[in-house]
Image (cartoon, rainbow, N blue to C red):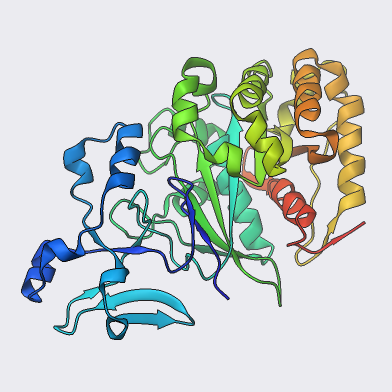
Length: 383
């Protein structure tokens, strides 16, 4: 079965086989082809690059051809999915790209549905470590995670796996040194915005889907909201939004929720987004909120176990009653986002990536995503 593709870069939707293919002029010339006959009209490309302030010279380097110009005998399919064009003279094109922005598509685009997930939060809220912890937990739980992330050169981008490897080797203290630039291998938000794309298989007999998530610099919610609007249209189209609360500076959540409401609220509500407000770095909770006298343990879901929706509801109510009610900024942000999206679409979670010794030992980081997938009926769950 083929599925419409949502380009993870420009957010346009199109049928699976309405892709175009990257080519080289040299290759087509060598095959004796008339180059002009295979050029795609660049009205979409021109508009996309203008919107993202990319120089026209760079845009013109992205040479593509439309399969509509090719006879059927030069098109090759796999289970109905158009995968390549092969000229009779022997030249092959297999780089499938978006017909709108001409960005290269992830492996399997069109053969499986795609889920977009926005991970947002203020500066230093921990998005990059959270993403690594989430993928690590999904993999450890036996939920298939195949990296389909493409870098600018069309190869697999291993930033998330590299971050996991670094986190597993060190402690929180070492991580702080990493974030200060002591180790160049660390892929921080400032270095790469995404999308990161992983193929997720919820369990035996379940259909796979592509998960695309993004890492946007948190300070932009306070300093440059126009940049957020330009670079993060996925916030309005994603089915899942994870908003991380920085327990070192809870006030930042007010900026983030205000920006969501003002600039993306209508799209999020229309799209029926599931929003998880995640109290991240759980070990800091007692210092961040007055009156917290005991450790609040993040929820854990056993490998191959369904999501207990009643338990998630209970845990969210407990956090609302005993944590959110005690912190004014958090209380206001939670009330605001519930009023916008509907309380039934919002839940509170708590998660951490490090244990009491400062070692990498994620807990609860995968739960908000699984909750959203369960609400959509694509992950096993109980009531």
